[in-house]
Image 1 (cartoon, rainbow, N blue to C red):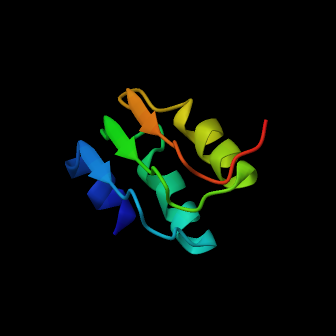
Image 2: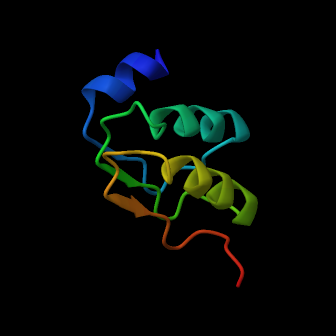
Length: 77
């Protein structure tokens, strides 16, 4: 399902949600290199350093993602 969503959606706003570990894995699929997703907002979604790091690592290969909002999460330096 995540693969078909990632091919059809250009913007996802999941701000102010509690993103679980499973959700984080699905988000990785959504921002994969094949995805056409252009914007993803995860502001205040209770993500930690490791989750954001993994997400950014995957997003780096996306050809279409132009905006990834991870403000107001549980991030350290």
